[in-house]
Length: 130
Image (cartoon, rainbow, N blue to C red; front, side, top):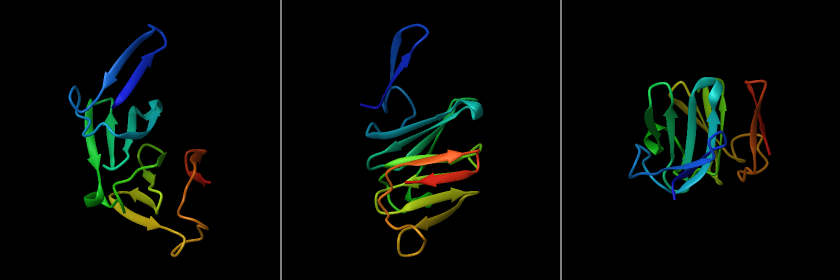
């Protein structure tokens, strides 16, 4: 469990988990890498998410105390250099921007369902939700 990383240039494998890194958990549900901004987001099935900053080699955890509506992470999309982090949980969509959370679902937004199958940022500032 955790992350399995394949280096295509060298043909080697590496593993990251809660025992050999600052990752908090091993129940990884989604990974999104943003090499242009030197960070990655790791979402967990039951434990929120971690943000890895490759510049500082530091991990930061994000959970309910930081504004996530639930700890389940099904998908993640990031606008810009962490300007806004969008998290799909299966029961809601949370946007974390400048430390301020906004929670969306079909009862308080134009979303027709809280079940989000996919998210994609286009042109660095437009989020497509499907």
